[in-house]
Amino acid sequence: MDPGIMETPRGDTVDVSFSIVESEPSRVQFVDILGNDKTKDKVIRREMTLVPGDIFRRSDLERSNRNVFYLNYFENVEPNVRPAAGGNVDVTMTVKEKPTGTVNMAVGYGETDKWVGSIGLSIPNLRGNGQQADFQWEFGQVTTSFYLSFTEPWLFDTPTSGSVTLFNTRREYDVTEESRGFSLRAGRRLRWPDDYSRVYASYSLRTEDYTFPLDYTDADKLAYISNPSDPHLISSAVGIGYVRDSRNLPLFPTDGTYFSYDLQMAGGPVGGDVSYRKHTIELDYFLPLFEIKGWGPALALKTTFGQINTAQPLAVPLSERFRPGGVSFDGQIRGYYDYAVGPKSEYGSSTGGYTMLLTSAELSFPVVQQQIYGVLFADAGNAWRGLAEMNPYRLKRSYGFGARFILPLAGVIGLDFAKGVDPDPYSGGGGWETHFQFGPTIMR
Image (cartoon, rainbow, N blue to C red; front, side, top):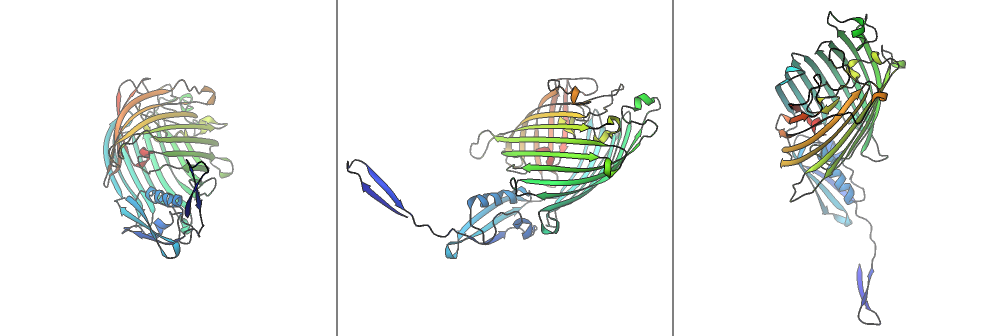
């Protein structure tokens, strides 16, 4: 580039011209990985959008850094670019590994589940191959559950994931419900509409058994099953889904969005005793509010909508209906009992809904960066017997505060204190509830 200055006839201003001679764009010559004592090179390289021979682009370097850090195997990922022969560049990714396997043991008490204990093991980077294995055993006065899962994120070294899950759950409320089965799932990363997206397909097979109190009449049983004389159901379902995840961090995200759509289709050509279509849509938005010397709070806005369509509502297994409340799997409405918000039987037991709406606003702020965070939140949601009964102005609301901790070997632990402002005798609310949570899903 050769700049030149030329005076104008008035002499009081100047014109500046630049003469530019373009050269060949720089290409990536070598990509080196340093610091990965456990994680294999290929696990890191397959996440990078910069590969040898590519034209060097700063945006690809930043995306590669994000993808590698998003694996959540490393405390730090530091890229470095240095000049190479022929006008090209060499790229070095220096990583600092962190302990990834977690073991958790817990004991707690809640109004719904009474005394509960749990033992869990999660290995997200099995033998440095990027595979994930999970085991969870929960036992208590009301609920006993067993969960075992294995995930291969890159089947045959392609961006196709596969997982298998085995489960067995028993809940003893007024009605005892036992569910056992397995699920298979395969997913694929996409390049269109962008490479934040992926699709998946799944299949699940489960059995459902119900045991009713002796004083339950056939009319009482109809709140749970369509045939009171046969409390045994087989559910066979296929599923498809789409996920777009552009969050900047795997834990405590401060920017980006998360969108998912899941459709489960039971019955018909895949058999079973039940037939239904279950739609679930989730949208989360993360926004940094401000930043001072690397410190700053972030706001998370979350919405979930669910709908079950079926010609036989009572034939849908109770475990597949929507039962939000507390920190239940179906959806958080902190300040209320777990699984307790939504339609009830005449005895006050949750019978689950066919339409669900959840909203949440959560402000998080770092106390110790990527280790301890404080949170302030407000939740609202409900479940209804159908879309016709849905009323977005009749939601169970709550507010509260809490903390998140990342502990070596224990993973993410959450502690929340919440107050429900729309109490009823069967869902809770009115007083302060304490909620414990374990695992990385509480940060989503």
